[in-house]
Length: 450
Image (cartoon, rainbow, N blue to C red; front, side, top):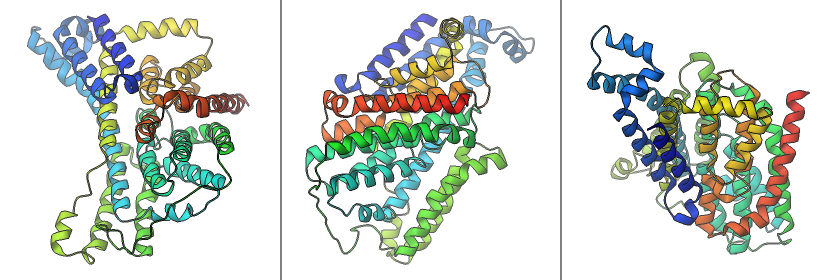
């Protein structure tokens, strides 16, 4: 049964990696894999419990006789909920940050980005888009950042070929920027949430390598752009159904939202509470400010309709379900005990942590980077904080996802939005992204062993 459960996960990984060809949503695959795995696990629960949790189960029974019902109750309350809690912490954090973005976007707090892009210089446009994306992705998850920047870019650039180049630069910047902080990507958030890395040490280790991996492909993309590009500007007297907040109000909301996200690591260090509590706190404050500012500008009927932020992007809902599914699916595989045997084998064969980091980079080029990091994290039984292993797999998965667009949710979004073929992306972006990733690995090695 353990082999069947692992087989389901492996088949799921194949479907996730080939999503752009099979058109089967990876979130649906992850959810099915986790539910099927746990149903099969609990069906043979007595064998798994006695091999993995014999002492805990005997304490749970308290001298009573073991029955099929008691086994199921033990698994549901003492095994399954542990992984639900881990997944929920990440999901709630993502939900809070995505809602913060929605509130800020509804009030025009990101309008300054369009102002920065008022240029016809192809290279200046490229670097402005890339730098802004990099800075935003440090605070927000890659998918949310990419979606927001692609929407802005599509309003300005009418030429599809130019949009393909600019969109590729956005994806590269989002993936590299997200790896710089523990709140910039679900992978770093998972490592931080599990107590495997500290926020400061993680960022100080990965900022320079990620910048190297970002600069190289971005510079290469700039070579394929003309000196001047055609742009379109639409000047509107107001923001349609959005509010007419003045500049200082929008800046205040932006400071509360983005500045609050920067405070979350400090909040976690002081209180020791889960990071999602800090994210919800920021959301609560921002929401109150939102209602105070908007109540004076909108009539009561409109205010009632706008009390809740608009529905989050459909893609963000998929990300939340995907993260939940992957964590639960890997959890049931780990509970079979097979991952321990696999780790002992790989640890004896691999020459060191660098081999795992490079392997993570290769795998994440075609498998989702979050699934890659989650898999390597589940493999290693160590709980040592700030170990080189965690930084290497985090960096490898982030930059490896730039080699092929299918390696990240941001890349798949670009492919669907601009109808980019995998071959075009690898030819124009993937090769230089691989070179940048390799150079970043060299820089990371010098920093670790200096």
